[in-house]
Length: 115
Image 1 (spheres, rainbow, N blue to C red):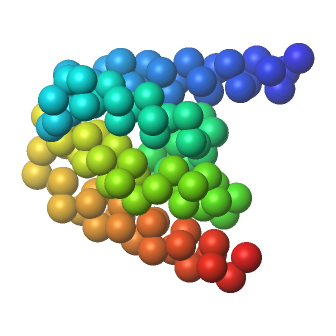
Image 2: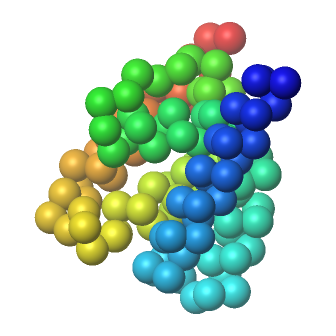
């Protein structure tokens, strides 16, 4: 029961993040909705939150999330992280976050190739 509760909570957090950030997306609204609908189904809420914590904070990457990230695809990863990095509260640090985004991607691809 606790496991289901934690999954529901994580999903709620991801949905809340999506709802909070959608207005600032740099692509057209219908394109943004398609991107979210396409990308969010490819990664677990746990891994989405982990990757966000790594790129925007001091989180530690869970290696099992690399598989989800690579499955999600580079276009989804790049656009979702850029979307969050473009938030007004993060202005001035976009380059730092985009570098961390690329570092996470490269690390996950290298792990996936050796697995």
